[in-house]
Image (tube, rainbow, N blue to C red):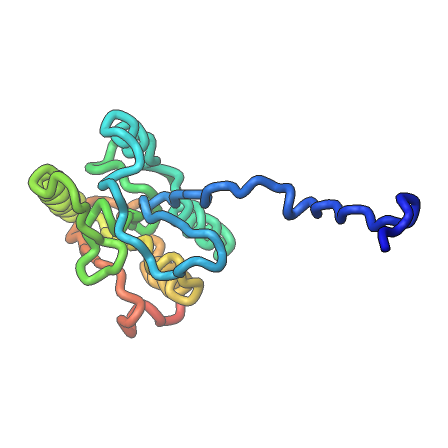
Amino acid sequence: MELPRAIRAEPRLRSSRQRRRRLPPIRRWDSTGIRLHRSGQDDAPRTPDMTDVVDSATRSRMMASIRGRDTKPELRLRTMLHAAGLRFRLHVSGLPGRPDIVLPGRRVAVFVHGCFWHRHAGCRFATDPGTRPEFWQRKFSANVERDRRQTESLERAGWHVLVAWECDLRDPGKAAALVRLVQSFPVLPRSVRRPGSGVSTQFSPDDPAAHAEGK
């Protein structure tokens, strides 16, 4: 027998989830060009569909905007040197290569090098770009050769040259060892602060001399 209209079952309303139109998967890209996936999908990385996520003009502008001075590793080292009571000058234009940090009283010149641009041997940050390999090889070789010439010029002028690498300054212990190495150079009287025999040092945190007590 048919039920009265008043008590007849009403049709169930569709939930908001059921009413929501199904959207296509979201595609996102990170800075390296690797496509990211929505949760629940395969988490295995996929091969990028393009070499770069920006055009060549934009990439060139981005690379040109990278700082050559006052970088984070340099600021970190300057803070530690100042906290240790050491006073210094910055980017002295009268010296070859304009060293990042100069301690005239100890005749010490410090270059803070980025591992990528200055080709830190054996460092994981000294990667090789996948595009235009010949261009990058010429550029890197010119950087290394320029660093060598500048170091030799400072040595002939009687400066002690220290090279601090970006990757080493990320480690507080290694950065502290570099500060102690700078302190190990004696303060010269003004009467004898003249050019002499310079010393070039590629700072190595594993060198026992780097862990000697500062003078």
